[in-house]
Length: 405
Image 1 (tube, rainbow, N blue to C red):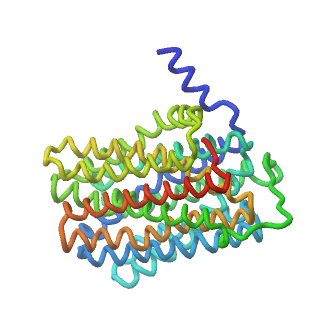
Image 2: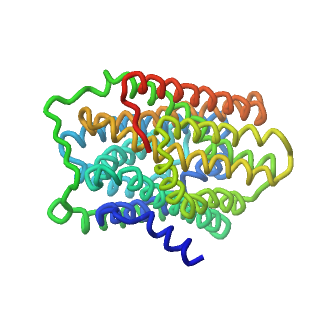
């Protein structure tokens, strides 16, 4: 046990102190994002919207994310990642607190759009900062540490969120989310000010290639959009499935979603370290992750036994543990060819597009053809995603550009 413990700690060695600070800032911020997993329930249970209306509200969520990611990338290349992160975090905190006071369909659509516009400006800036504060050989593990912080926050967030809803009401979630964004901003100013934090990997490209002309990157982006569409069902249609089909309470739903983050916190870093040593290409590893995530939906239709929810969650968790760190690392590696903000903006936009179509499509499908058929469709999309990643692998191999974990 002692050896296992020290081997686990060794997987974190070599990461810069700036990456650790960035992870802590992310943890504080994400611990407060307990609104997101419960947003579909908040809209249906508290504000009494129909699932089809929730779908359109979640589309506004995705549109705001799309616009914010694009704008964040542009501003990162123009004014730098630090200024974008500070302004995005602080404003997001204020907007989240205000969001609870909206209760009409139009006002909520506009409010969600504005919150996500500002909030997702942070993402491309954070990825560029992550790349700058990491040595080249540590980038995948640096991404994994940030994801650990995100998922530790998400594991605590839904569990605490379910408790808050049970003992108080939904408005408390918005207050906590807003306050944690402000706290994260204060810490960011304190520890990552340019005068205190120096980049370890400054990329200067005199003749940057446009990300829009990178064919391999476009194949990658389409596959990540499909992956995002199926993955996001766990934060929109899946909580409703848990409640309506398996009759779980909000607290039980929060605990089940929290298990996802707990598994990732314990297992992801050792898993990534091991996968890096297997010398499989990033495209191969992303393919495996996509396949496992697709499988997580298929198993739900095999039995009505409640334990299948844990099995599905386990498949999805392993799938995302593999797919996300290596897709992040792949995007940062390709970004060296051009403007980093542009590349990372397109990477985050792929998930914004998933938000635009994924939540709404899932809600409309559930409303029209039921949960079982929706899960079959999501499985099919996952298989197409895996096929695209196989095509990407073949293309990169032909161009002699295949990168390894």
